[in-house]
Image (cartoon, rainbow, N blue to C red; front, side, top):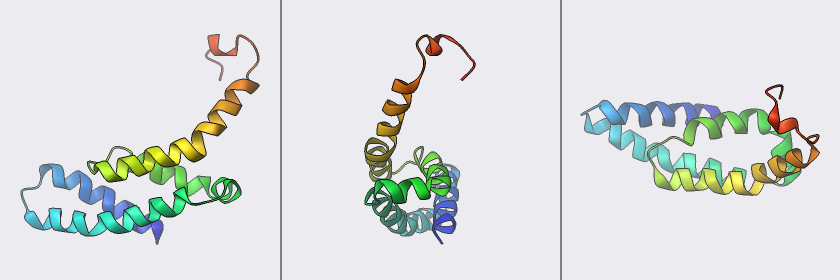
Length: 105
């Protein structure tokens, strides 16, 4: 269900940029609310729940981060701040000294 909503939302978001059809905009508006609900749900996940679901969550975030809806992009930012950035900070501390100077990562 979540992937169906996110795929349709992304398709509508992309086509709304080029389509003069007002119905595309109406559909996009209709899918914005369910997409927001999905992202708010992800934001409320515990660390363990987030880790267990990263395979589909990362795909959704990567797709919707570029959408035209500012509210959706803010939710993605909040998810990254809460769930992803702490992992990146921890991972960067685990790198051996000088690892950032190589392309082997």
